[in-house]
Amino acid sequence: MKTKNRKNKWLRILVGYLMLMVMIVAVIPAVPSEASAKSVALSKYRQLLSKSRISVLPQGKKIMGDDYREIRYYSSASKYVKFSIAYIDADDVPELILHDTRYGFGVWTFKGGYFRCLQWGDFYDFPVGYYKKKGIFRINATTEGSPFYREYYKLQTGKKSVEIQHQDLNEGEDRLENWGFYIGNSRKKVSSAVFYKNLKKYVGTTKMTQIYMHNNTGANRKKFIK
Image 1 (cartoon, rainbow, N blue to C red):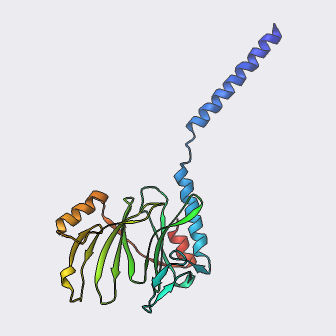
Image 2 (image 1 turned 45 degrees about the horizontal axis):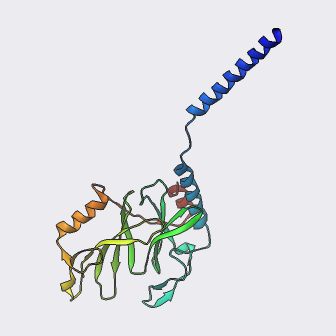
Image 3 (image 1 turned 90 degrees about the horizontal axis):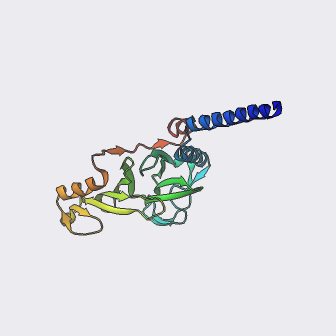
């Protein structure tokens, strides 16, 4: 009888212990997967920027350089590279914007164990801003002869970026007939009201966040990549 009571006592203790462990696990907040993904991405960005040479846009791309000649790009010395952290798409993993004004820029993300380039441009293109977590990225673009464009792109991981609209300013040009607002790849002009209404479909009331590029120094990496 005593043996049976002793067994029951230990059984009750064991059950109580198991219930306590279940309760403890239940109240401990789970670490969101995006939080760990963000930490990994930021660590990879710091590692990348610490290298002596960095590819600001995909290697092997044919681009126009600052001497107005077509070249095949591979990498830049890190001292010429500037960077910025941005939250362009809807998740909490930030994107890394790299820019070498002699060659161009690239918008990069680190997901699934790989660096992926979401958007890039050459010497004529400049990253200007983005609409936070709306996936919309804006660049200013120029060409020889001084035409000037404001271009808006939809960026998506694993997919080709899509130009949703652009404004053709043609500053200093004789070809003023092209001045105006355009939706997508269409060459049909629209009014400014239609242009900004189309943008609002993507961004709602979110205002554009301006991009500020930082010199690639250890102090700046510590300050801004966090």
